[in-house]
Each structure stands twice: as structure tokens, then as C-alpha cells.
Length: 207
Image 1 (tube, rainbow, N blue to C red):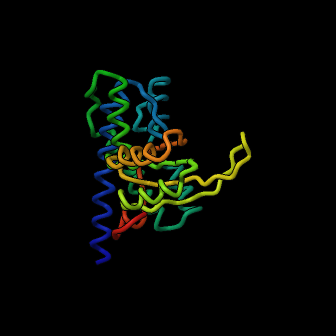
Image 2: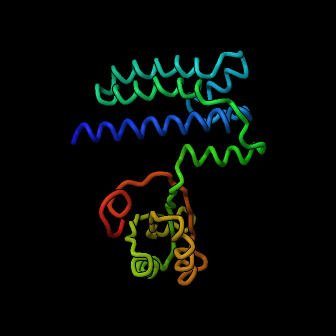
Image 3: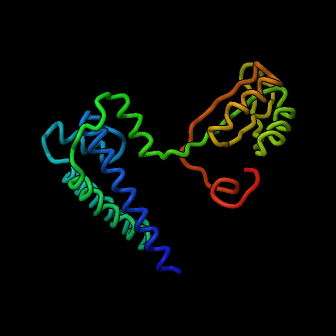
């Protein structure tokens, strides 16, 4: 069973690295877009001093692997060395081709490659009608709500802030619930690429 898990994990690592290499060589590199991390730095240095991006990734990953062995232990070291060895090879193997002509569109497709397709939304709500909003969220969306005590600096009044994480498809229904009780509610929404916990990565029920 342990061997099966290791094989599945290796398959996912290889698939992820291949996908990242496609993003670098077909979306970011052809437009000289420097994303965050080592691959972004490699694109900058390749354009600046002419060193192949895969060589820069090899050097940077070598430093990361050594640091991982020293500070993070054997298991993480093994996973890191697999990824560090395969990524530069994949970048060399995948052809450098401008798949999309529009620079902005290229940044958007690459964003999905890096962050995943199944995005979630994290919403913070401040309203005087927090109890009613919470009740309807639980009833209509089947999600629980985290209540965080806050105090506004303008009027120095304590007011609960509601936090909920949900699938992007439920967001419009949430806004309808909030507007139904308080059209002046203060709502801040973030897009998150990964959520772990009950109702998302295991089991069922509210989060």
C-alpha cells in the first residue's frame, strides 16, 4: 500500500512538472514574462545575459536541495530532489513555442497552470445584521461561518466579521443573501487556490 502511494505521488510530481514546463516555455518565456520564483528569475537572466533558463534552474534548484537536506529532513529532501532534477530537464525537453500571441491572455492561462482550475473564494463580511446573514448562509448554502470579533477605527464600535470559504459557483448566491439583509454591508473577497479540511478535501458537511 505504501509503494502504491509512492508511485501515485511520483506520477503527480512528474505530471505537475511537465505542466509547469509547458507554462514556462509556451506562455511566460516567449513573452519574456517573469513570474515569481526561480523560473521567473531564470527568464529574466536568460533575457539579460543569455544563459539558458534550464541551466539557471539547475543551479538554483541545487542550492534549494542542499538547504532542504540541512533544514527540512530526509522525506522532504527526496521529494525536492525529484522535482529539482526533473524541472530543468522538462524545460529543456518541452519546445519553446509561443502558444498564445496576446501577452495578457498568456499570463491568465499560466495563472491557471500555477494555481489550479478549482479555485475557491474566501469572503469577509462586516454587517450589523451578521446573525441573520449567518443563519441564511447555513440554511441556503450549507456552509458554516467563522465569526471574528472586530472593532472599527472610525466609530470605535465592536462588530463581528463573518468569514466563509466556498466554491466560486456559490459566490453569487452569497452576495444575494448579504444584499437581502444589508445592502450596505462591507464585503471583501479573495480568490484562494487551495483549501484543506472537512467539506473540501475529505468527508462531507460544512466548513
